[in-house]
Length: 103
Image (cartoon, rainbow, N blue to C red):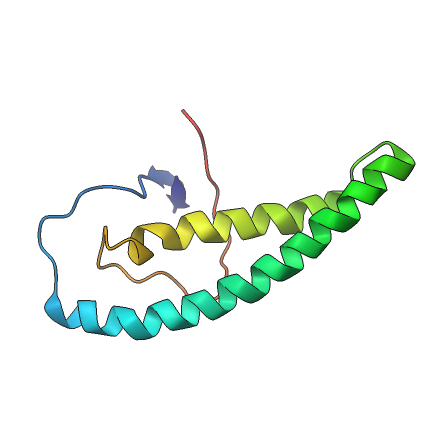
């Protein structure tokens, strides 16, 4: 869940009304989000590869590498409701700080 001003907000909720104009704008947004996600994902994959060797050699995880991979996963969850046409609320194109909880 995304946290806004201290109160949790559910990310994936059904919205009945939809904007046709937003549907057209979404195409450009998808391209931009896709570029950011692809670059971020490649770097996160490299971090995970380095993390694997770090654990193999030292027997412990590196916090910075772990936080980078975590940031990528949070970004993907943050933009997912928009990219899967569940909402018309546009997310930021660049990664922002979000907190995700599991119930």
